[in-house]
Length: 316
Image (tube, rainbow, N blue to C red; front, side, top):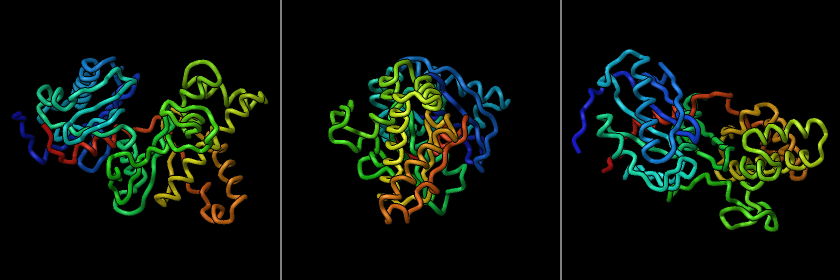
């Protein structure tokens, strides 16, 4: 496939975070500063995803008042199993996509190669840039959404692991007699922390159910207090695993649950402190001081996708 070659000095790079309900898109300059940001509804199914991405790009270019030839690179962060070399996405269930050759679908329409990355990993890369963790230091972005997973960045680079599953902490079992997880195990972190599991336990739809649990717990509802406590302990367990296995400097809480902000951070801190009180070794790690929460409305995921677009991974 022959694609239009854009001069390396072209100043604008685009990044898109494709979510279940909206696609968040940013344009950045060579230094990574955000020049423009738009959000469009994400349409359902493979054709809908492609159309949503193209719509967001058209709106960005229009807002900036630049020709398409001024775009140097495009990166897309999307849920599911990503084959970066093939440019494909599989099992993006929340988008209605079983398998999609996304790069091949987009490149003839856009005239540029498209870099793909899993949305959580892209968000980790963007959060690292926003926090200044580029050449030194390390961090993990613990994504608390419908499911639970982490992206790990060290020295400005994503750590994907041997088969690309580094950071899949949601399916670590912390209670062998706990509830059955959709993966088939019992007591996975995700069954205590995932937004879908909380909505099922409380009733209602996520993310409204999660906020409702916190509100009811604050009002003294015993069932809500129990669910919130299990959530906090599950997040704390994920933090411990990430620090003990990768020794990242910081764990940043992201995803839909992070919209709770300080309310979430406070209960996670309490759980970490309680856990540390039982173990001098864990206490010495000061885990509660190594956890932060991503700012509400952060462009981290779309910014990370823009950075992914810079990385040359031949496919096709």
